[in-house]
Length: 336
Image 1 (cartoon, rainbow, N blue to C red):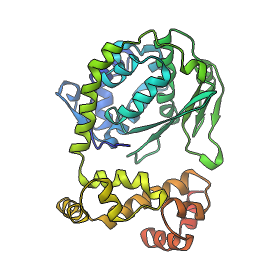
Image 2: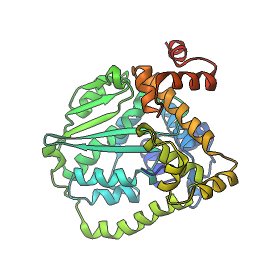
Image 3: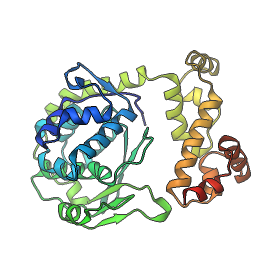
Image 4: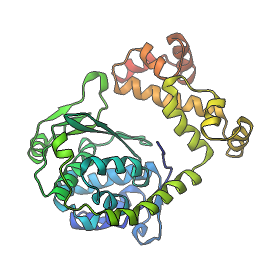
């Protein structure tokens, strides 16, 4: 899946904040973003700035639940092109499949769609975040998908299940909105953020379906995805390949070069031009994933070692100890 290093700022964000009576200037100031951000043509922000923006909204909302405000004020006119195009889909299944493809154009979020005969489950993962998100902000995506289904079908769609890494303080208000209980993610997958809809609701026709409008948007969105890949740095593209392949043990530079359709020598040269080298990138991805697994899951060190592409746990323990100066077991104890 593609990962972007920058995202175009949608003008719809400003409209939503105004409708929710959240002071735009205060949000931008707290996020450390330019005060004229929404006046700039094609303004872009990094993943970290995206999350700073989210934190700032949470602060300026001052106790009001931002996700529930979003549900109240979310309208078709507030959608930017990738989302509005997906509203033109035939049903929720088609819409989320399209959104999974175009999420890299919207923000540092990856969407995985799991379909079965009884349900459609959406799993959401964030990347590029260096700080813990408030529990309420984890709900933004889940509220969005629920409200999208309700707007497009004009039916009171009820999720089958809502799973969160951490339950919000105002749990009852969210359960009233979703019309279903909230569940904390299990110990063996403590970072899980997902929502499930019944197969019947996921196939319920969208009253907003418009194949002609979709055709209008599709070419432009595909071009933006192409540009996303074309403008990404070589190091970003290497990291994206490693994130997807490392658990299968495919960590060699030859494998990555082949995935990028370039020679090993060309890959090394391009990384050198960016003052990077392959082994440092591999180590950085392994360290990032290791600390995610150690802090967010109850996986054993053997399981973590396997997911990081190490052939045996001792190799992982030695490597981690060299990176951080403490063993992975000690790191996990410090967190506790």
